[in-house]
Each structure stands twice: as structure tokens, then as C-alpha cells.
Image (cartoon, rainbow over all chains, first blue to last red; front, top):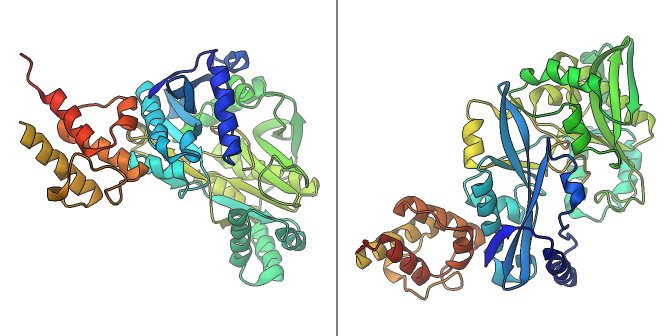
Length: 366
Length: 82
């Protein structure tokens, strides 16, 4: 077996590989590399690696590299993305995922992975076996319409999602009335002054986002570059997200990226018939985090969603969500870092990491 | 030299997989050694790298799936140059 960079003729092998996966019941195809992957390469490098035996593709993984700030200093690091292996349908290829990750590590020793369905998934277990350090990205949920959520649960087919929601509901302790009391109490206790605050939807990030990045980045122990060029590369205009520019009396205080998933959107996670809001990403100086979260929450609330969730590792953003009546629920969203990346971040606590669903794959529900 | 490599390699197997080093044979693989799954395979080869001060290629991570194949690979790299 050989692991190497993708080449144009691999398109055929990848198509056949995808067919074998589909026949085996695996619904995650490998996407071939194309010119569109090089559009933003001044800030974001995307490279596909393939594992082959003979002339057959047996697996593939993407390496996305870009700039991060650690303690205000610039560092380059990467994400291992969309690993897919023939081992999903044929145990004879059990060595493929490990070989792919080893190849990526040799390319970029400072490597991370995000999501993966939590710590119990095959990829997360493999990374632990390779001495990567893992942590859950805390999950915060607010039920906007608890009764609709209850009804919607019967349509949720995915048992992990269903279980997560049931656990979340159980957290409220006193039931529906208790939920309202809890939520209201948190919001009152953590009074967030929203006077003069406005959240405007924008089509892209611009100079104003650069100014916010300059004001905010050194306030976070670890954060991916989030200036306008990078954000527009990570979340191009074609991506179905809502970009909110948040200001107070006309002065920018931060931004948030949210998504709304309507019933029937089959490509957006296993939420059945629920209307789901996601606060995927946000940036502001820490003192404005609560205002930005409350503005994003208000926007989604007004969009008539049944529930809103957000995965936020950094304590400032977790605290901002709690202050808006969210509760911390079980998380199936994991963050893993390679030994060299762990070394780079050794002086920081995980709650100093600005990591959320805006990282790695970008804003996705699943 | 060969016996030394075999004994040290068996020691790594015992540490990572908890198996009896005295019972390991060249033909042993993930099908015959309990706990030698794809995750432990990575742990095993990383531990072998540390113990023997070598670095496997990504391809070797996928290919070295028997005790004997690992032993031969280590003996080759440990062979003094003539």
C-alpha cells in the first residue's frame, strides 16, 4: 500500500472507491481535489492524500492548513478532515486509517481533528491510540419551544441525537415549568445590557472584521486566524450560513455565524422535524461575548426555531451562553490534537481554546 | 542480535497488548493475538518506534501486521553495515 498526494487521474479511482463504499452502506464519499480548493490558498491550503493498493484507491484524507495564534504568536497548523477508508466495509484494510494519519503527521506535525461524533467513534479511538490528546467541546442548548421539541423527539431517528436531547431535557430537573424558570432566572441573574445593540446580516466579512480580529485575537490563548480573508475562505458566499455583524450604537462589538435548519432539510443532521438553530462561530473581545451571543440568540429566536445549540470550548463563550439561559448538555463533539500540537498548547488550559463549529469543517449541524 | 530483537519486541507486545511474551510466534497477527485491533496496532508500532529508535513509513504502518514481519523489519534496520 502507498499513501501519496492526490493526482488528477485519481478521480476515476475515487469514483470506484465511492461506489464500493456506497454498496457497503457507507454514505460518506471522498471528494476529489479540484481548482476550487486552491482559490483561497493564500490563507488556507487544502490537500488531499490517498491510500492505494495497486491501482485501487483504498482511503483518503484531507489536510487543511492555516494560521493560528497561540498566546498572540502566529503558528501554522492543520486539520485532518474527512478521513474515509475501505476498512469501513472491508476489515482487510484496517491499516489504512492509521497510515493516512501517519502521512499527515509527517506533512504537518501540528495536527488537529474536530467533531468525529465524539470520543467513541473509530477515528477518535484511532487518534487516542496514536497518543493524541482529546477533549469534548462543551455543548450548550436552549429550548425555545420545549413542547415542540418533545413532539419532535418522536421523529428523531438517530439514537445518539435523541439520547442527547433526552439527557438535556432531564437536566432541567423540574420539567417544562422548571425549564422556563431556569432559563428566565439565568437571563435575569446575568443581566446583559442590550441597549443600542443591533445585529445586521451581511453577505461577507470585510474591513470591520479585520478590526475586530485585531482587537480580539490576543485576548484568546489559542484561536484560528479569523480575519476577513480567512473567514471568507472558510465560509464562502455559497455556504448557507447567516453572518451577523453585531454593533452597539453603531460601533462594532463582534460577529456571529448562525445557521437555521428547517424541517425536511435532510442534509443537516439527524434532527427529524425540529427547527434547529446553531450558533456556529463568534468572535469579540471577551467583555462583549455575552452581547454577541445574546444578539445571535435573539436572531435565531425570532426565526422561530424550536431549539438552539452551540459548541464552545472557550470559557468566555460558554459563560455567555449560560448567561443567555442555555444549559450545558452532553457533547458528542470532540477536539483532538497531535503530540506536537499538544506540546505547542501545553501552557494553556483547554478552556482557553477558542474552538467551536466554525473551525475545521466550518459551520455544520452534524 | 536476532534473539535480542525478538525478546525486546516481545516485551513491547507484552506492554501494549498484555500478552505473554514467551508464547509469541512469527505467524502471530491481529487474528491470533487478543486485543490487537487497529487502534492497538498504532499504539504497538509507535511503542516499537520508541523502543528501537526507528521511524516506520506510513505504508509500513499498514503492512507490518504480524510479529514475524515486525521482527524481520527490525533485524534489517539493526543489521551492522559491512
